[in-house]
Amino acid sequence: MKNKVCLKQEIFQRSKGVIKDFKEVLNELIEKLVKDFANHDKRVIISAEEKGEYAANVTIGSDTLVFFMHTNVFKLPEDHSQWQMSYLKDNPDNAYCSIIHVYNFLSDSFRYDREDDLGYLLARVFVNKEGHFFVEGHDRLGIEYRDLMHDVLDKEKIAEVLIKCIEYAIEFDLYTPPYQAVETATVYQLKEVNQIMKMKTGKRLGFKFQNEQDQII
Image 1: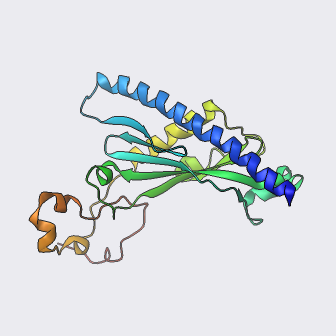
Image 2: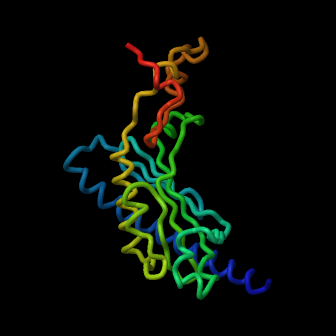
């Protein structure tokens, strides 16, 4: 019991350094993007904001990425593909990880305080006691970083993951909601422009809306 408690504490302490590195790399990346866009299109809003010890937001144009580290330590379930490696079989302690989540929101969801808007999980970064990591995520995010045995999460790897998250978020377009979802509005909603701006909005990850089968002409 004592060993497990100490193990989790060790992983948590390491994870605090990891999220700190994430923030530092994010700031460096944002500074570079601000300079790159300064001579290209000054209308594009690019910023990074620390949200407490374990989280940060990054805004690039119409997209905001939210990075946050869970304060608990998790063990990979035994049916997880990572357990097929000798790295975990020989030392089960390597299966305990901290997790950093990356969510994609619309920037306007924060700007107009649309609390019902949806954000989508782009990636989860798992880091164990040795600083080894793997990523679960969409597209290339869930393919390129799957080798927990050999991949070590240094600042170079963090930069790669962050860039891929940003690229994916930008390529992931906002779709027009189905007609039925917005065909009614209350008087309260229409009294003020601010209320109109608060109508629920979100991106989607390839799924079909329930009413999308009905064609609107």
